[in-house]
Image 1 (cartoon, helix red, strand yellow):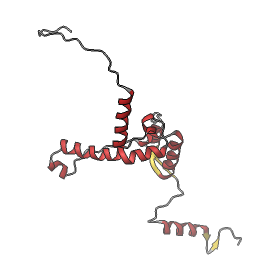
Image 2 (image 1 turned 120 degrees about the vertical axis):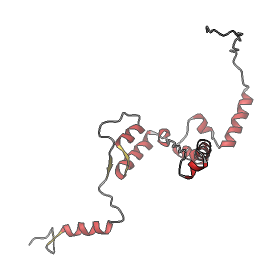
Image 3 (image 1 turned 30 degrees about the vertical axis):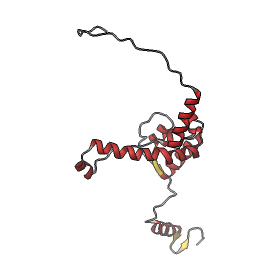
Image 4 (image 1 turned 180 degrees about the vertical axis):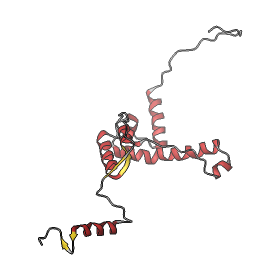
Length: 168
């Protein structure tokens, strides 16, 4: 590199360091015990239940600690008092199997939990026009209006005091 400043050139040592297998095994054991990381998680060969347990025991706790530490560093006490906080979100769906993603997508569309573009994003697909809408099954009714909903449904079934299936 050419510069106007005088200085000494120090070559970089590019030798790789070899870590003995016993030392590496010892370090992996310490990390596994401290953070509760199983061999299946480390190897990437885990089930949904194993990932859920790992999330609840390790990641969720770390996220809360990180949020609190970042909020206290970035915001004054006054800013924190009025509600300024750092909030982190962990995309658990990214680590699910395709079958589990399909189950979540089915639940999300029947309950209106996610938009269509959010479901596409879960599968790595591009968003599309008019995809920022939620679908919801009409088979579900709010518990606050369920009695009125049922009464309206029964009043539409009867016609003039007679049930709609009977002949006059």
